[in-house]
Length: 273
Image (cartoon, rainbow, N blue to C red; front, top):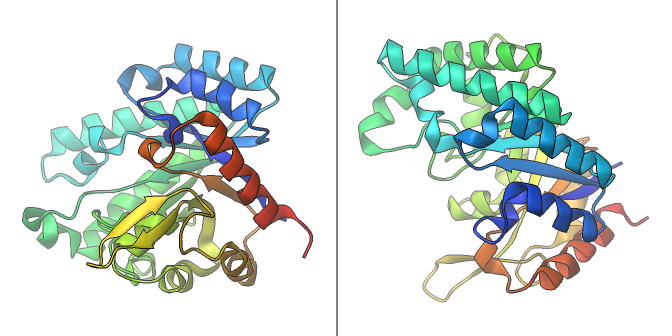
């Protein structure tokens, strides 16, 4: 049985993380994803404050995301000192996620810049690094989920299966992001097939194509995404986790508008069929 929630990332630039928790609760979502925006939010004092705030509102934290560009690319660096510092930051985020009661960490991974393509094509090396990270996440009670971000390593539909061939950890899962799948130039169905039963988290944002082929993001219900089709596809994959509304803050004007969109998401994924 799927459930629906909202990510604090929807409020980036419009409300701080703790304020976003209050807005999400007012919108009637029972669960949320916490996007930790910066280093100070990785600290235990902040995580405890945020947990208390969510608990007071009856809001459960299902997953945690971090500002990945602050440390995730360095996890794959050829500079050992960069790797060490990045792992320490990641462990701090894992600890914050445990304090928040989350069971999932959402990972972007390294960006697919031209200079890094050689390293990203070395699946044996990448698999060894990811195995260590996934096992470390397990120590904090977290499932380590790699998200299909179109400008990062998972920018094509066969990445999951190729990576799994080189990962020894049993704790590697995937976050399916709808907008990122479409922005990659491929279909959501291709990514769903690649991840299969290892989908552990879903980010939902609608989209539409312009006449010149660009992809514009928008609130669910305002674009081309067939949410009934997506629900059916996720069910065929055996998915029973959270569908998290995660849109960009410029995709809506008012919090009321965002709340109305969430109501459509909740109806689409939890109403009896």
